[in-house]
Length: 145
Image 1 (cartoon, rainbow, N blue to C red):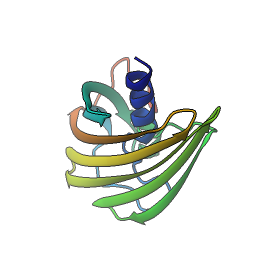
Image 2 (image 1 turned 120 degrees about the vertical axis):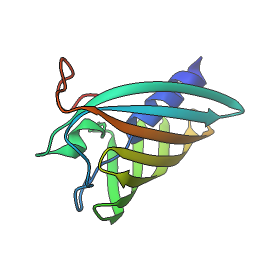
Image 3 (image 1 turned 90 degrees about the horizontal axis):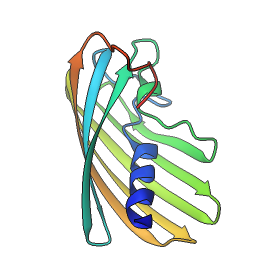
Image 4 (image 1 turned 135 degrees about the horizontal axis):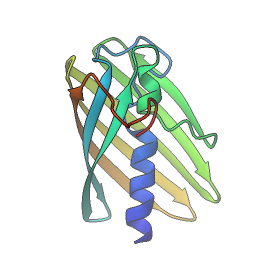
Protein backbone atom coordinates (compact mmCIF):
# COMPACT_ATOMS: atom_id res chain seq x y z
CA UNK A 1 0.00 0.00 0.00
CA UNK A 2 2.83 2.39 0.84
CA UNK A 3 4.35 1.92 -2.63
CA UNK A 4 1.02 2.47 -4.37
CA UNK A 5 0.23 5.62 -2.42
CA UNK A 6 3.75 6.99 -2.91
CA UNK A 7 3.59 6.25 -6.64
CA UNK A 8 0.26 8.04 -6.95
CA UNK A 9 1.53 11.10 -5.06
CA UNK A 10 4.69 11.15 -7.16
CA UNK A 11 2.71 10.98 -10.37
CA UNK A 12 0.33 13.73 -9.30
CA UNK A 13 3.37 15.84 -8.56
CA UNK A 14 4.62 15.22 -12.07
CA UNK A 15 1.36 15.19 -13.97
CA UNK A 16 1.96 17.24 -17.09
CA UNK A 17 3.75 20.43 -16.20
CA UNK A 18 2.16 22.46 -18.92
CA UNK A 19 4.50 25.31 -19.78
CA UNK A 20 5.80 25.65 -16.25
CA UNK A 21 8.43 28.24 -17.11
CA UNK A 22 8.56 28.42 -20.91
CA UNK A 23 6.21 28.71 -23.88
CA UNK A 24 2.64 27.69 -23.18
CA UNK A 25 1.65 24.38 -24.68
CA UNK A 26 -0.97 24.78 -27.39
CA UNK A 27 -3.98 23.14 -25.72
CA UNK A 28 -7.62 24.14 -25.42
CA UNK A 29 -8.83 25.69 -22.17
CA UNK A 30 -11.57 23.78 -20.38
CA UNK A 31 -12.10 20.41 -18.72
CA UNK A 32 -9.43 17.77 -19.38
CA UNK A 33 -9.19 14.12 -18.41
CA UNK A 34 -5.86 12.35 -18.01
CA UNK A 35 -5.45 8.57 -17.86
CA UNK A 36 -2.29 7.59 -15.99
CA UNK A 37 -0.55 4.21 -15.90
CA UNK A 38 2.07 3.85 -13.16
CA UNK A 39 4.67 1.08 -13.15
CA UNK A 40 6.72 0.60 -9.98
CA UNK A 41 8.50 -2.38 -8.45
CA UNK A 42 6.73 -4.83 -10.75
CA UNK A 43 3.27 -3.43 -9.99
CA UNK A 44 1.01 -1.55 -12.41
CA UNK A 45 -1.68 0.89 -11.31
CA UNK A 46 -4.00 2.98 -13.46
CA UNK A 47 -6.18 5.93 -12.60
CA UNK A 48 -7.76 8.97 -14.22
CA UNK A 49 -8.10 12.53 -13.06
CA UNK A 50 -9.86 15.62 -14.32
CA UNK A 51 -8.48 19.13 -14.35
CA UNK A 52 -9.61 22.56 -15.44
CA UNK A 53 -7.24 24.32 -17.82
CA UNK A 54 -7.50 28.10 -18.10
CA UNK A 55 -6.08 30.09 -21.00
CA UNK A 56 -4.44 32.49 -18.53
CA UNK A 57 -2.50 29.80 -16.66
CA UNK A 58 -2.74 26.35 -18.23
CA UNK A 59 0.08 25.06 -16.03
CA UNK A 60 -1.94 25.55 -12.82
CA UNK A 61 -4.27 22.71 -13.82
CA UNK A 62 -1.56 20.07 -14.01
CA UNK A 63 1.34 21.04 -11.77
CA UNK A 64 1.33 20.26 -8.10
CA UNK A 65 2.82 23.49 -6.79
CA UNK A 66 4.10 21.78 -3.68
CA UNK A 67 6.57 23.89 -1.71
CA UNK A 68 8.70 20.75 -1.31
CA UNK A 69 9.36 20.53 -5.06
CA UNK A 70 11.54 22.43 -7.48
CA UNK A 71 11.01 22.35 -11.24
CA UNK A 72 13.45 23.11 -14.03
CA UNK A 73 12.19 23.38 -17.60
CA UNK A 74 14.77 21.77 -19.86
CA UNK A 75 12.96 22.32 -23.14
CA UNK A 76 9.67 24.05 -23.92
CA UNK A 77 7.76 24.90 -27.08
CA UNK A 78 4.04 25.04 -27.87
CA UNK A 79 4.21 21.35 -28.95
CA UNK A 80 6.69 19.69 -26.58
CA UNK A 81 8.11 20.14 -23.10
CA UNK A 82 10.62 18.42 -20.84
CA UNK A 83 10.79 19.23 -17.13
CA UNK A 84 13.09 17.96 -14.37
CA UNK A 85 11.68 17.91 -10.84
CA UNK A 86 13.06 17.27 -7.39
CA UNK A 87 10.87 16.86 -4.31
CA UNK A 88 11.75 16.28 -0.68
CA UNK A 89 9.17 15.00 1.76
CA UNK A 90 10.61 13.96 5.10
CA UNK A 91 13.55 11.68 4.42
CA UNK A 92 12.39 10.77 0.89
CA UNK A 93 13.93 12.60 -2.07
CA UNK A 94 12.50 12.11 -5.56
CA UNK A 95 14.20 13.12 -8.79
CA UNK A 96 12.30 12.86 -12.03
CA UNK A 97 11.83 13.91 -15.61
CA UNK A 98 8.60 14.32 -17.51
CA UNK A 99 8.24 14.68 -21.27
CA UNK A 100 5.02 16.07 -22.75
CA UNK A 101 3.93 15.96 -26.38
CA UNK A 102 0.97 17.89 -27.74
CA UNK A 103 -0.65 15.68 -30.38
CA UNK A 104 -3.16 18.40 -31.22
CA UNK A 105 -4.97 21.06 -29.20
CA UNK A 106 -7.28 18.39 -27.70
CA UNK A 107 -4.79 15.54 -27.01
CA UNK A 108 -1.51 15.13 -25.15
CA UNK A 109 0.80 12.23 -24.38
CA UNK A 110 3.39 12.30 -21.66
CA UNK A 111 5.77 10.02 -19.81
CA UNK A 112 7.77 10.35 -16.61
CA UNK A 113 10.58 8.57 -14.86
CA UNK A 114 11.09 9.17 -11.12
CA UNK A 115 13.63 7.71 -8.73
CA UNK A 116 13.07 7.92 -4.97
CA UNK A 117 15.82 7.58 -2.40
CA UNK A 118 16.21 8.04 1.31
CA UNK A 119 13.49 6.52 3.48
CA UNK A 120 12.02 4.79 0.42
CA UNK A 121 14.00 3.54 -2.59
CA UNK A 122 12.09 2.88 -5.78
CA UNK A 123 11.74 3.70 -9.44
CA UNK A 124 8.42 4.87 -10.91
CA UNK A 125 7.64 5.05 -14.63
CA UNK A 126 4.38 6.57 -15.79
CA UNK A 127 2.54 7.12 -19.06
CA UNK A 128 -0.16 9.75 -19.50
CA UNK A 129 -2.86 10.18 -22.14
CA UNK A 130 -4.84 13.38 -21.81
CA UNK A 131 -7.79 14.65 -23.78
CA UNK A 132 -10.05 17.67 -23.82
CA UNK A 133 -13.59 17.00 -22.60
CA UNK A 134 -15.51 20.28 -22.64
CA UNK A 135 -15.03 24.04 -22.69
CA UNK A 136 -17.05 24.24 -19.45
CA UNK A 137 -15.23 22.93 -16.37
CA UNK A 138 -18.47 22.50 -14.42
CA UNK A 139 -17.70 21.95 -10.73
CA UNK A 140 -14.00 21.31 -11.34
CA UNK A 141 -12.17 24.39 -10.16
CA UNK A 142 -9.43 25.94 -12.26
CA UNK A 143 -6.03 24.77 -11.13
CA UNK A 144 -7.24 21.54 -9.55
CA UNK A 145 -6.58 17.96 -10.52
